Length: 294
Image (tube, rainbow, N blue to C red; front, top):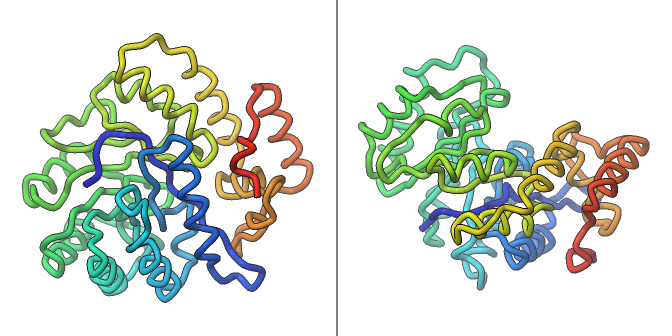
């Protein structure tokens, strides 16, 4: 059962033939959990999930379904088609996964509240035991959740809609619902969110800021002075100047060739931009944990 904490939207690692490197993807998630994260979400947008085949997703699910860190592993779907979502979720439930981070279908413009409600309603009707974390990221889905609409969803499906990842940042400051998990999508908003009653964060960049973010979280929970939050925000801001997937894979590829592959149409950052990013991080005295290098 997901609870308050610091989570990563996990990276997916690919072979030269663009197939999913299942072992390396799971190993990366395991390592960053061991470095401090409460958990990792597979098949979010950072994991290039909409570019990964259903069959590969199922293969990874079957592997993490018996993994020693399974209780720290969570799933998105990264599917647009309703029936693909249902198929993947039902498969994951065979391995006792119940909680899923789900974005409204992307691509078509003009998503409406009526249409998005219909999407989640059909999912819940097909899979009554599902627990859904709404994924609010209008830049990708073309739909921005409002406080009133989330409240309506929770009222209609109180046993199914359990939380929200807010990457549009229009909800986390003001939406207050009982027993509802709210995770801003950036660790730059972690401390502010915690102060406002949020549950932590689910972030792309915690793939690298895992230890810093956990320290900020723990210091808040233990009422200690915050000495790392400024650095955490500055590191996040450095990555935010680039495409996050490209920047994260470029960062890791300096130490591990597994990260050199991303799926088309994505690319690593150009060499000059890679150097620029690394120089910015060096200026912040932020370096890769040697324990993460291959």
